[in-house]
Image (cartoon, rainbow over all chains, first blue to last red; front, side, top):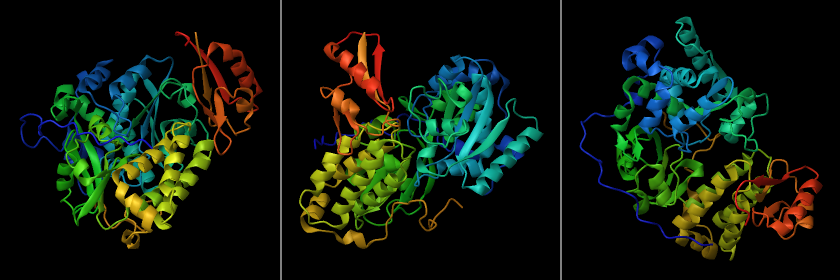
Length: 444
Length: 71
């Protein structure tokens, strides 16, 4: 397998220019221990000025702000709004709060503590694109969350707040149901699995109407851009990647949790925000289970932007950073996650249905039954057969993770292949999966 | 006019007719699903590609025409 060497990270001086202290938090400036009701929310974030609600004004503001989607793909948020607004007939807005990544907690934090910031963003986006329907989608197995969101929506309806009726929808609680075509499929009465595209949701989505699907954090940013404008938004982050973002830091760090950072903050600085390593580390998993392993010295200076992570051979994803201790086995950790991803296939596309279990077997063989020649070669041969052959990016996410494994830990992989399992297998797995025991930390 | 080949992976269940009828552009993976060697169909093979698409029992092979220079 051809492996390109790590390129030096794209980093200029940090911070990028002199700025007043206390620029952050923004999204999290109004956060408290309990969910903020509508009255408290208004006092903390202030009113939306009437001028932001003039026709086309908000789309112009969002486009000028340079906001990109915070769900993982990083598509320009304003451009997506403009193409939906230009489509024919009635429009639909969908807020994606079905956080599929087991290691991400940022969307749940927003929805549980600051629901009205997300709902403000939904109502404003619906008004801006001319939508007459709006859905807030979360995983349906989170009963408490569904109830609290319905309460928040009722509170707004009672106050006569929004011109569009917002409906809260519970999606099937599986990994691929948070993919945007899955959500549209589910809202159209289907089982909520990815569909063949085109058409994409912004062309033909819910009930055949042009549909704007934005992550809930993206909508929360839109709620603030409507209040403070595009120049304010660009006052944080890099010129090429403006604004702030939420990241979830976990693993072997002193204070795991959700942090709001400026886009472009070096990963090492984010690690120090989380209290630094709790024990000696060997690598970071950045971007979640569709992201990449990066050796510690490679990851530390990399700026958290889509371009920065891409240059380092990774992906920003939904802003997930997991610190792997030196005494853990990255092969065993990855084997477990690839098995999970294989089980989470929607079961529709052959290369995913058959390829991911084969990949999970091959990585598991290398991790647990080492000492067999050819195990690495077997993995390397499987990757290109799986990549790019599903209707969604699920199989590609798994192969990217495995590619990064072989790239970040070549010696470790050769040790397993030549000599057998390592001492790291004795450690309890660190990477979280649904159904694990309750995690030992939370944002409480 | 550029003619391209695409598989709808959701509809495809791996009958393998396409690889029989268009071996120049399609081979099967170890599970029997088609791998398209080149998305662009050379002009001499366009008729064969259309025949392969029509023969697919699940209509999962798509022959699409788009504006642009034919290679």
